[in-house]
Length: 596
Image 1 (tube, rainbow, N blue to C red):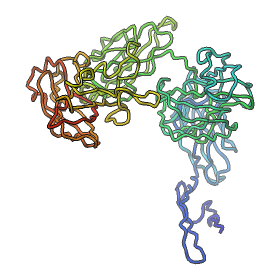
Image 2 (image 1 turned 180 degrees about the vertical axis):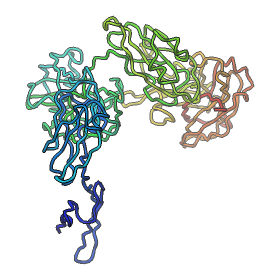
Image 3 (image 1 turned 30 degrees about the vertical axis):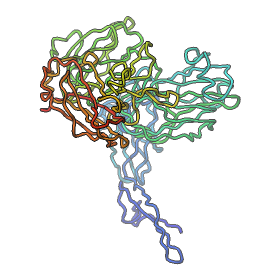
Image 4 (image 1 turned 45 degrees about the vertical axis):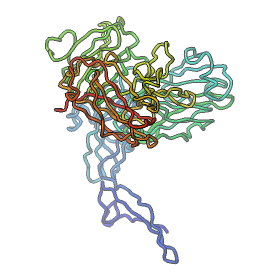
């Protein structure tokens, strides 16, 4: 069946009854001979307005190529287009000051080479031969200095077509055979050779906030990675080409990825080429890129950080601990770093070493490393911070950093179990959970507890901590108990291992909060308790057999001790009756100020 919509009467360019600049939805239900009705899909179309619409670049876009060609969809019935263009909004609105660029018959206009890092405005008035329809004023900002290329490293003379052939070679990753710069995320087709491995990496800059879909192809095996911020340490795998993909085919399409305008993200592709046909391409589409296109150089830069990057806490973080230590990745020429911290964005953005007295509420420090201990911050407060790189390269010896932000939570952390790892004892960075918490592993007839899994199979992704049953973030602490021979099973943590120290009255804190997760296989007969110093309180509202997270909140005053001198916390289960054995998971042990 064919359905058509004739042009409306009296010269109306739309079917009768339709309104310009309006989206319509329609559906066709097919009826079989027997009367069975098959419901159709809902389709949509938008009736074109009489003004110009759908501009390219997208309204408000950042990082636009200075050689850009402007284009748009013409208004309904238009026969010519009058273009106004310039760097002054009011002049473009009025069509004065040299912004009148005349009439064009095709819906595109090339303004010539533009300045970098500058905002331009443009307007297109449509004419149907009788009437003129004034268009909206659109804007875009050209790309900044330093953008335009991305680096490609090549390791030649490596046989095979799997990534392991590249990553297992002694020359990877530090000794590529050669290095090139690309003006787009595209090697070209059959342009490199055979028996090589390569990677393309750098920073990707987002033009408009929203969700972006990425497309990837390589020959042979390859992967595309993107970080959640500007730090390579935070990359996530977007796409994997297992064998071979065709050039320009982009058979690997990602889920939508949220990006923020003005932010930069570390992007990397790695692939291993065997004997025939070689290429690597990445493309994208989203609110700033209307149609799928290979990622162009104006959105890319080399990964040569001169400013500080990779902040911790991550930019925009919430529920940050008030005793946090700020850290960052220093730029390549860093000698020292100037740290600014405050609760007002404008103050932190405007302050520098020459005007510190004008901003008394901003904390300043010059540090030689890449960390800064804030001390105790306020609960439920938004903070802004900036790192300026002091160096010996730039004439004035300083690179001003970006202002980052985070918001503190309403708690102090005793332990969230996120810092523990599987690194061997004695090796640098080792922080196994049983090295921090004390248990009864060495004397099980007296204390039947084991903190953490005693013999994890690392090859099968097992760990000393629990990584599946978690209350917050990615890890929790398993407490394995056995009271069949012992009378109790308890684990303890000294305040010397905590960042908050012994004074548990700071910032008005008055409540201890602990989260527990039981197991249906537990007998449920043991009595859970918590001790501060040697003062014990029984916890009666946690079911040891319940496989869900349960919260226990205890007023600190109930312990009846000197809360300015807390030396340890103990969590245990004491035998009742014949005693039993089982497992209990702990997470997010915190202190709160109940008034907040």
